[in-house]
Image (tube, rainbow over all chains, first blue to last red; front, side):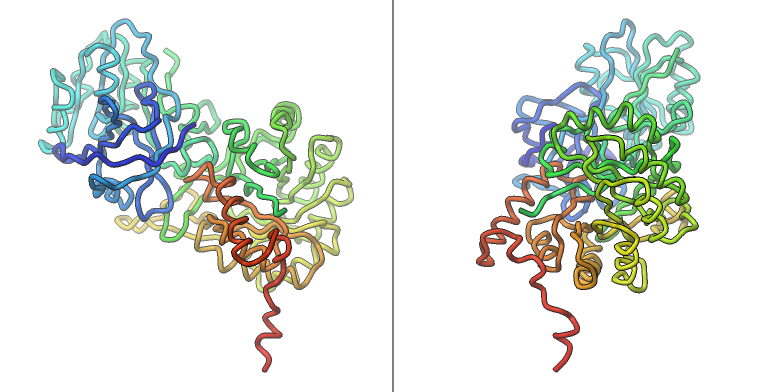
Length: 221
Length: 287
């Protein structure tokens, strides 16, 4: 578990979202689906973000500015520096034969890094708006739908090995279409390393911490 | 030396052993007689100047803690404090009796004040007395700041057999979603922690240090050596770190270094020399 103060390379608007580019420093990029805790200037707690891209010497995160913490992160400028802890949690299992990437909204965040690791497998993406859908340029070749159409319409009957990230209703729908899928969940986190027990999801009558047991969980097929 | 601990429920020594090993003692999450799944999510919310949590004492129960968790924690090589909780005096006695047999347990901290579960019907001093009857281990009573006279509460638990005080637990708070105006946390209210607690803790530690002659672990919003030194001056013999660990796992070593530097800046060799040097409030108020 490494925590470092790293420099901000810059930010870039990607449709409705912001790509935050940080210097990598001594941090490892980790496995696709793993996440980092990013210090949000002026806020008490850091924010968990999965890695979007790992260009040489950099770590890049796709962020949806939905609250004070994410807005602070999207307002960072080149020359600023923030503390970053990671990589954390369990990423996607890359030993898959017929991968299909499925993402909804900001759930596209871990997909570019995952796609690169898997050699550019097929991908289907769903968004709420044209502006959000501009983020699909981070994943060239992906099929894209915009609401009222749903990304699950693009999941074929025999989907192969599904690796998905998105809002909870989408993940539940994917789970029923593709039992055994690897699903990357999201929850508010205070620490990201198992200390606070805040980020739990229910599994088999017990609450498991997404930060240590996830964020990628694989359901029994 | 002023020992630096973690506040109970703010660190998992098995997931982050390298962090636990930077502490002078590791305090477990609260252990109850039976397994508890805890409260449903959402369980945490950041607020202005602090955060709310409503975990609800999630733990695998004293049997599993004794047989599986504590042996692994003991292997960390750090003195072990176990936080004990429950919903009646009998629960506290049950957990403490089990812990009493274990040589690896240095101290038992009684969580008498969790704001996120139903309270035991007995008073804090009755819970301490029930624990005292079954163990000879050092017993620390963890008190809530939400009381009219914490010095009186301190006297009562010390009279009942507490060997020390842990001051303080979180204080009940509520956060609303600005759009829906409904509680952010699934259980409604939660325990408020973080920087906002600091003046409250200072007042509690100061009042109790004047009232009873037992060691006090000060905690609540400490994030720097300067914060720690203020608590020591108010009367704390040890410091515990809570919310700061969530954002900075390296906080124990940093706070220890900063405390040493602050101590020297105040012309003292060790922080103990400055312990309890904050004057009496009553004496200052008189002409």
